[in-house]
Amino acid sequence: MQSAIVNFCKRVVNDKLKVRFILAGIINTVFGLSAYPILYYSLVKFNLHYLVILFISQVICITFSYVTNKVFVFKTTGNLWSEYIKFSSFYLSYFLVNLVALPFMVEILKMNPILAQILFTFVVVISSYFWHSKISFATK
Image (cartoon, rainbow, N blue to C red; front, side, top):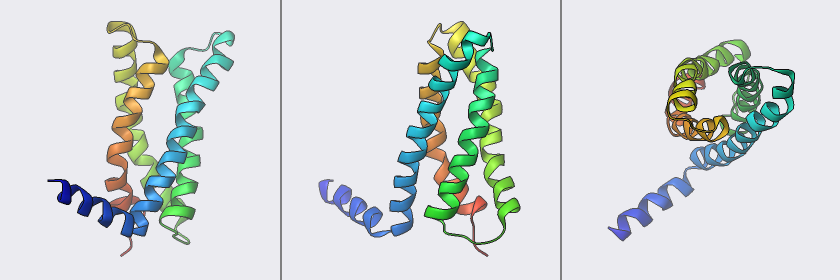
């Protein structure tokens, strides 16, 4: 069992694309996890609803993540708008789910909005590699 785990780790480390994706994912996750609380505490005093703040945060974070994935991970050239649309459609799908999940976690489960958003973010992180490698930045 241990050798299987070691072999898996060696394959991941030797796959430069996956290493770059993991590094970019760490940067994007830290950026994304900090953006919502910073915006929340900055904008809630203006009586903005936490879902409006979520929308603003998502637009900023998706654009930041797109740039890091395009430039650093997949290193594609051209296709700016078609890749951005494919990339954004992944996050738009999750955003729509988030619009249901976050109120459920906050209003029904009585979770703090920031903690609820952090938990939801991990679901997005896990599935994003497959979407972006197969759809957003797929080479023909």
